[in-house]
Length: 116
Image 1 (cartoon, rainbow, N blue to C red):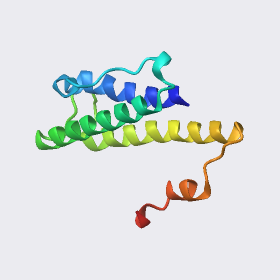
Image 2 (image 1 turned 30 degrees about the vertical axis):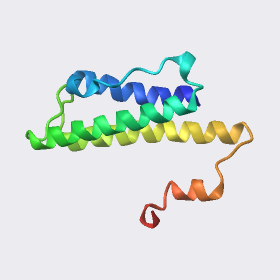
Image 3 (image 1 turned 120 degrees about the horizontal axis):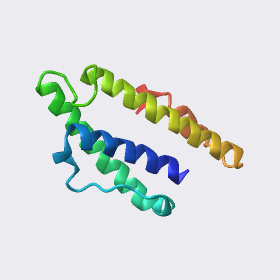
Image 4 (image 1 turned 180 degrees about the horizontal axis):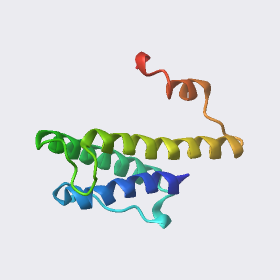
């Protein structure tokens, strides 16, 4: 599962490198051998999420385009949501198959957006 989280982070970095390398100053790729470090994964994902947020704000302020992505910033956000949702599903399935399914509160919380 750690490799899935690392992959999500690393794909964000791939896009940042292409579209806004100046936002990568404090970011580093998470290598496979470090994918078991939950604290590192959390810090990395939080940092890359903030950088992607800055990228989207920058793109919207500059006409709605993300460098290196053909459609517009809204489509780029859709791409990221689809990609990360795919891996979230893989993580949930892996947990279930390993005998550690998501607890009900977490599983329902993924979909009950209005109660947060």
